[in-house]
Amino acid sequence: MGKKVRGGRLPGFRLRGRIWIEGPDGTFLGYGRVVLLERIRDYGSISAAARSMSMSYRHAWRLVESMNRQGRYPVVEKRTGGRGGGGAVLTETGRHAIASFWKAYHEFREYMLERSAHLDL
Image (cartoon, rainbow, N blue to C red; front, top):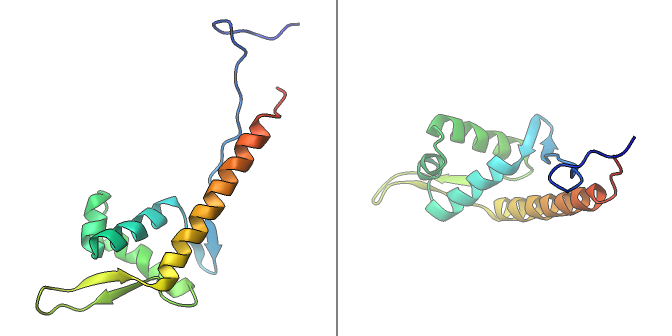
């Protein structure tokens, strides 16, 4: 029995997957959490970062609390109000976490592409 051909091409198969970093209490970092951290870095505010992602402040704050609790050091520090209001800043640990995640993410994607090339289905 021959291979089925669609539109003159063999069907393409590829491996798909997601990657995240587990911590003591479950997910520590994943794609969405890293984007949230990047937006906090860019906007200087958890609420502005959450709005930019169509996420509630409460949900964003819970994600930040989870990451801060699980890590050795906080990834985000809240600044209290005052003249000009409060805000949030990404810590050095947060910047390192972002870089570590993206490195693992890109290595994972490369692995999946390479392995997909060897699928014989």
